[in-house]
Image 1: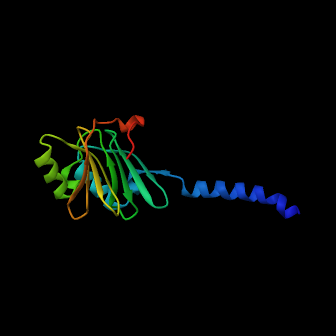
Image 2: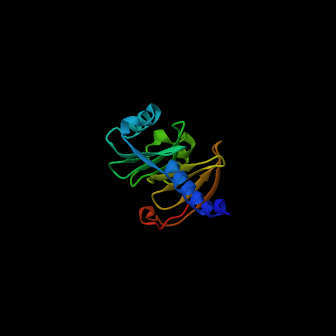
Image 3: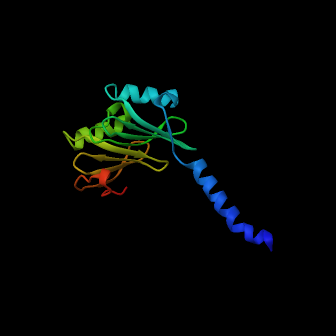
Length: 154
């Protein structure tokens, strides 16, 4: 019976320990993996890393202009959210060519990739979804949302 009374206490302690273990940890930029530091330096040579976080399976970097980049643990980017244009060097060539040909003057401001597709949002709010072999799967037009104030959901 006494062990049963301890069960809620043990459960709470376990939950708090797990939360602390998997929580984001702020780290100095020089503790980021070299591949991440090199990617940021090459793509954003005039920007500095304002904040870096790590958790058990990914890294998050925020640049001094507000650009946010999430990286997988292996250093490959997962998501980029910029208030300006994402450098073409970070995007597959088929994305930059498609945007240039179909949306002259538009800039890619957000990019997200997963196992199924690559999604980008351009400056006019249009969302484009590509297969990893370069086919445009879907186009969703709309006005540019302010993701930084919670209005946009991918």
